[in-house]
Amino acid sequence: MSTLQQRFPNHYSDAPARLQAYEIPERGEPGKAAGLLLPASESEVGEMLRTANETGARLVISSGRTGLVEAQRPEGEIVLSLEKLQQPLSFSLADGRSFDFETGLAPEAHGDALAAWWRDAGKPSVDGASILVEGAMAVDALNQILAPIDLMFPMEMGSSSAATVGACVANASAGANAVCYGTATHMCLSASGYWGNGEPSGNCTATRWRLPSPDALAIDSASVNTDWGLIGSQGAFGVITQLRLRTYPVPMQREAAMLPVADMPAAMRILGAARAAFPGEVEEFEFIGRSALELVRGLRGDAFRWPFETDPGAPYFVLLQLKTPDPNIDLAARLYEFLAGELDLQDELIGYAPLPVLKAIRHSITEASNHRMRALGGGRLSFDTATPVAVFGDYLAGLQAQLEADFPQVEWIAFGHAGVGGAHLHLLGTRESPVKASAAALIRRVIDVTLAHGGTFSAEHGIGPKWAEEYAAHTTPETLEGLLAQKRRLDPNNVLNPRSFGFDRLLK
Ligand SMILES: Cc1cc2nc3c(=O)[nH]c(=O)nc-3n(C[C@H](O)[C@H](O)[C@H](O)COP(=O)(O)OP(=O)(O)OC[C@H]3O[C@@H](n4cnc5c(N)ncnc54)[C@H](O)[C@@H]3O)c2cc1C
Image 1 (cartoon, rainbow, N blue to C red):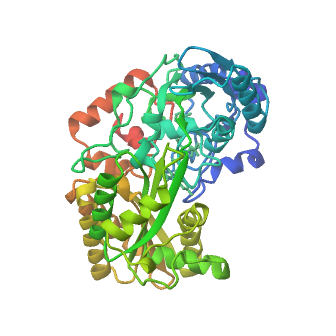
Image 2: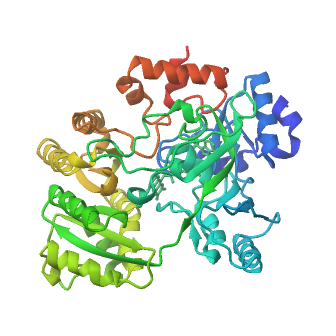
Image 3: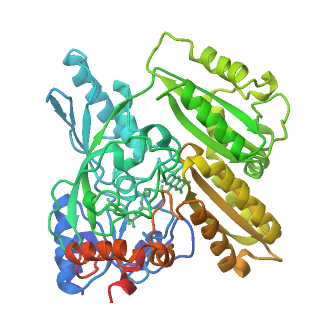
């Protein structure tokens, strides 16, 4: 019996049937877990880490298990699952008054209790309010708690029903409305937990979001800010067990439209014009490539509704979403004036539909890509890149042209967060021509073109083991040494996520 098992008999398992669920990653091949640790309290996380340091055990962190860079997939390590740490702790107003949540309630009941406290307090202003939660609370659960008092935690990802706030803050996750609110790191006032050596971290802080200049990268999870400690460091140095999060008012009105564009440079001109016309009110600016939309149409069948009377036949579409805190202005009319007036778009090229219909199209792309991959039977390479917004249109146009010319056998699906220059690229092979056969050349080409445009090969999904080699290859020796020095200081035995960033090789 291992020391971890002896010390935590009720919170440790090595039963193969139990481990199986933790061996299958969101994407990629299954791994192999040596055991499973399920801490039931924050302090137990620290105790487990200290024991792992004594015994030389290695752990991979697992929360909602939606991560896309294989960080949570064990390869002989023990899985440290934070899934029991999902309680809200307290809600604080800017004037210092606070509400403590009861333990053990469902999110809706927490939301009702919070709303009752707020009403009894005379409905005070919630400007600047924050909420203290445990690390493994799911994003959607947090929003269920905040919704009754018209507040939100604005992470909009296709994975938010399972993805946890701790992981999002650790991974600098961005999502569809990063153009407005930044990444999860910016939504976090402070995070605390335990370093890899088992010592308490104290409060780690980051900075509030400010939209960078169009010439700078807005999102880049290949750049770890070591001054932020646990925040944005992807579980490399420690485990976030508790966070104080900013809250944001749910906008009084939202309006959106889908627009066909001739190419991505044209799409980015719309973004520039929209930002100038609606300062601070562009909540989302997503792009969807033609092939992605066709796949969603195929997947949905008769249930699919074009937001246009007829298919406009464009190679790209953008989804522009505006918000306002003002209940009285006519936001729909302002959007229409902008599209029909300033952009001079014909009515048939303005794709209006209820917001959930437009969102459903955007959020179906991954599922549609999964279906297509299975049907083609040749595997998939997935990329999560970003460039400065100023060159994003040219970047995508250039990359697509190169891939179509040099890899005609590969199917290209492109979509993502154009507002912050972020692209999700799926390259699919066929049974006759599996993507594996040309994987090295494809990866090289995508990364080279991305870097040539001042971009990053990991915009928001992190490094994990998936991009460890690229990280080492494209990081300056000074930056790499800074990361390794921090790792040696805070996790000297490389207990936590030992293969992420290639630590197992780099620390030798
Ligand atoms: C359909 C789909 C859509 C997605 N869309 C987006 C998107 O738009 N934008 C985006 O950024 N991501 C997106 N993702 C990726 C994913 O949801 C995020 O990376 C998210 O942060 C992972 O959260 P999780 O709780 O599932 O973490 P897990 O997958 O359980 O963990 C992954 C890794 O995160 C780190 N980690 C987890 N919890 C902690 C913690 N408490 N402390 C320290 N480190 C921790 C560890 O390194 C861990 O190994 C998407 C994923 C899917 C499946």
